[in-house]
Length: 83
Image (cartoon, rainbow, N blue to C red; front, side):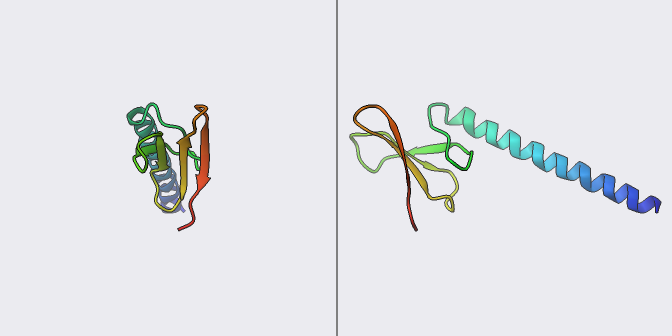
């Protein structure tokens, strides 16, 4: 029974470390992309250039599929791109 307790405590520690590493990575991306909006999935969006007359961003995860752009009024609009 003692080895089970040790392994359960070890798995809780590793889960906590993974969670903290994910939080640090998320903070690092928000720091790197300071002026980018936050995606609907909760992660930072990175800027990209498709058209030169407006600002555009897309989610850092390829499976997410959300993009954002700034319209002529200065509002940020989100669009889900089907792949």
